[in-house]
Image (tube, rainbow, N blue to C red; front, side, top):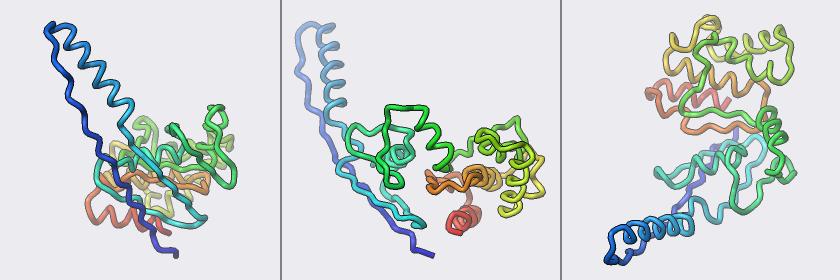
Length: 212
């Protein structure tokens, strides 16, 4: 197993300038709003000078204090957010943001997402939640169910296949989310604080699954 690499993001602190008061209250309020909007648009930099290369089979932990842009970076890598400048190269090809249909196909087939919240469909059974990526990709229901059963068995949830998410523990829901994310064996798996809502012991178990 390759060791987990850590990437630390630092945030540039931007100070706001004081806005001069004017005699008329209405004009003063409008001027202030415009100036603050102008400052936020021009000076707020979430990510700057980020160069990151990830090799096949490598596990990377992106660490840093709250608000430095960790989630923004993951969203850009996952093509959920668009960068204002720079390039994203995936499997040797530069990603084009002009065609949303191609981006959707890329996310569906090549990228797995696991979030802090599981985002499971509460009205669907566990096995149906896991089957969703396969059904959307064109799998037959039988083939999708077989793959889902294999994943649930691997993650220790075979006996919960016909439960609905509200009746599972937090750790069980997160494992269902992981099963759904890896259904299509994506070459890239992105996890944004997947253990943030879990107790320490459950968090350790979830991390072990990621590093298998």
